[in-house]
Structure formats: structure tokens, C-alpha cells
Image 1: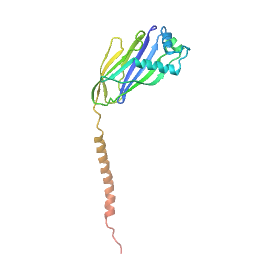
Image 2 (image 1 turned 90 degrees about the vertical axis):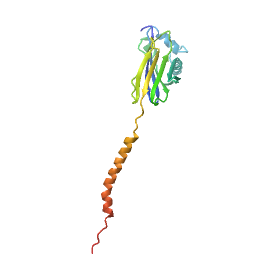
Image 3 (image 1 turned 60 degrees about the vertical axis):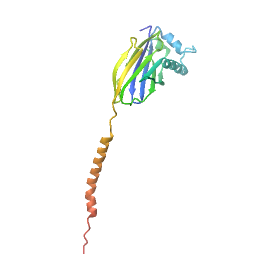
Image 4 (image 1 turned 180 degrees about the vertical axis):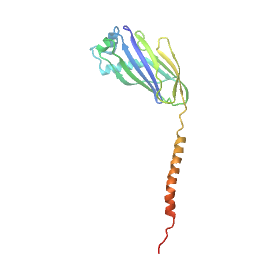
Length: 196
């Protein structure tokens, strides 16, 4: 893909929200063009401010919705390759994004993700990762032909009630303590014999 800009998104669901990792890899023939978009002052270097500005531009081109409501994305990590790495075709821009949301509500939910960044250059991939948190189970996934958009259903199982087992364990511990203390208590209550 020498003349294309590969934009790969991985989406992870967790009880406290959604994490998106974007890997943007310009092909050799478009690397200078992408570099020029990032290097806004054209000094041949990418500054931290230019990295942040480009990351914000990417975020503006991405839409994430949960259950039909827009979920704003925040930038939590950024990594840019050198110009040489980009020109040689193996430099990846990595952006880590999060959207805070309470995904603990029991039942069926829907997520929609769409990437509209640089459609004239972009080749898109999008995947949802298997959740590592218990209780969230992925359902159907639908993508458009270009993989710019993913529609995902997922199920949140009822939270396990841990109070019952804890109460039983507490009652068992109390019984054990009483069983150990009872002989000592009986010995203390027994009247002592007086010796003449």
C-alpha cells in the first residue's frame, strides 16, 4: 500500500468506558504529504505542539456513539515516528483515545464508530477486541464496505451478587470462633474448689 494511508482502529470495551487505539501508517508515496499536514510551520521537524494539533484534527474526524448518544473522545496517549521512518514506510502514528461511559448497565447496548479522517488517502480497518472485563459479551458486528464504520452490539450481564457468599463466610467464621471460645468460657465459669 505504497500510495495509501492505512488507518487501523482497535476498540476495547470496559465497565468504565471505551478505549480506541489508532495506528496511522502512511505509505512511502504519501509519507511526505502526511508529514506536511503535521509539520504546520514547515520547518522539517514535528514539535510536541504539532503532534497535539494533528491528534486533535484526527479526533474531530472520528465519531463514537453509545446507545445513540455521542461519546466525546479524549486523547490519552500519542506517539509519532521520525520523518525518516515515515518515508521508509514503517513509521506508525499511534493515538490512544478514551470515552468515559458507564457500561455497567445490564442489558443490550449498541456502539457505533466512524472514521472520516483523510478519505482521499485513507484505507481503513476497524476491529473490536474481546473484552477482558467479565460481564461484557460482544454480539453482532457490522462494517461498511470500506471499514470506515463499525456498528457493534454487546451485552452486559447482571453483576454477580457477592454479598451472599460473604455473609455465609462471616457466619461460618463466627461459629468457629464461638466453638473455640466456649470451652474457655465454661472453664472460667466453673467454681473453684477451696482447699482446707
